[in-house]
Image (cartoon, rainbow, N blue to C red; front, side, top):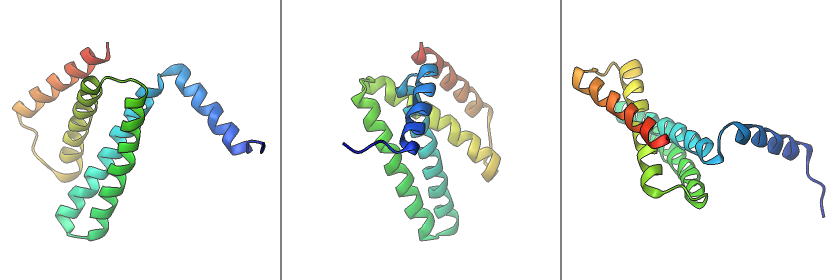
Length: 126
């Protein structure tokens, strides 16, 4: 049996430290939402510039994020709860990215909706 490489041992130790703080499914959710936000940002860039590279990067990040989703489901995260946590976190993230980086407007209705989204995240995480 081959010996584990040092890099593998270090990575496993780091994952153990993180999972001692947060459950693995939460780390996967963070990775999923982050990858989706990156992919959606590249999709927006494709819409703005028309550069195919941005479209391909958007697809790549969304597909990699989906691998995190599949692992979350394998860990037993309920589909409905995981889906809502993912959807709301990405919606809030895209709202921030749209306002900060693309100058999109933030109306009172959107702000109230974001507040409800935060409440949903908190209640579902309990």
